[in-house]
View 1 (cartoon, rainbow, N blue to C red):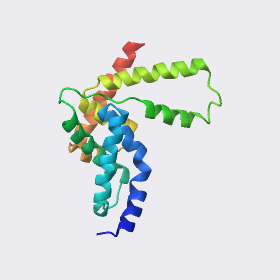
View 2: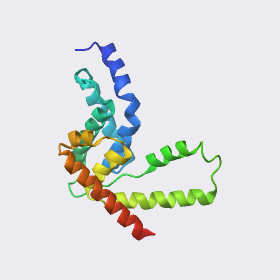
View 3: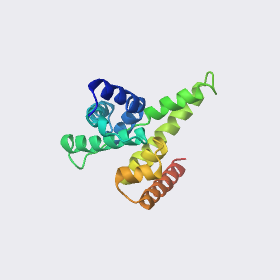
View 4: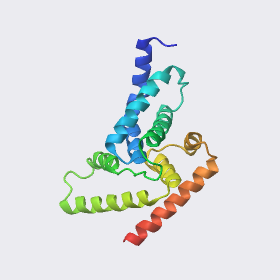
Length: 180
């Protein structure tokens, strides 16, 4: 058992750098920024309580697993089974804006409108995916987890992760192709 000071330091090193990713995943799973904040708060409490059991490895995957489990527990307690909304791409917009800031010093209004339309189309296409495909796509393409990490997180074989991801991407391609 770690001392309170050591536990807090380890929590700060392991969990805090990945809170943005945790919030983004919770938003995708709950469909609401406010609900996601509640889920991440609950996940942080669980992560703090279990930080002494963290054995090293990918801290981000460890935290996202806790967030995923906390999200589904929260959804089971707070929403009827048939009503599950999906998140938005605001977190991706923030990342894109930050990355693109160095490339475009002052984007035009037209560029902004095109980017917003593209984001809305992508958001709608992701929202239309079945939950297992959406979850796998978000974990891989948005959160950047490896196939192995996703496999362990979802408790499915790597082949299933690969299949779900391929089907999700194919569906997105088809949906976005039809939209144009």
